Image (cartoon, rainbow, N blue to C red; front, top):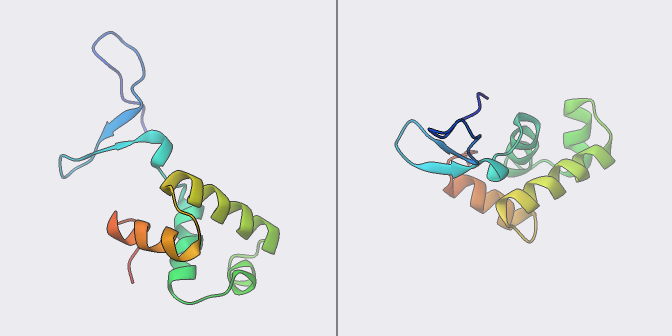
Length: 91
């Protein structure tokens, strides 16, 4: 992702989305976090996600924890709900 700069050359922590909305950079999920959340939303258990993505179950848990933090979610269900509402994943 390209950095957004203010008129004075400083890097901004907010970026403009195509629809005109803005999203703070620290709220952006990584592509892998999005992929993990999508699989969870599709009904996969964390161990299944690990098998499908060829990563360890601990790595899945780390991706989920990071996504919870970025989304301000308290658990898996809340994270999926918030990601769907933001258009990050689909049901």
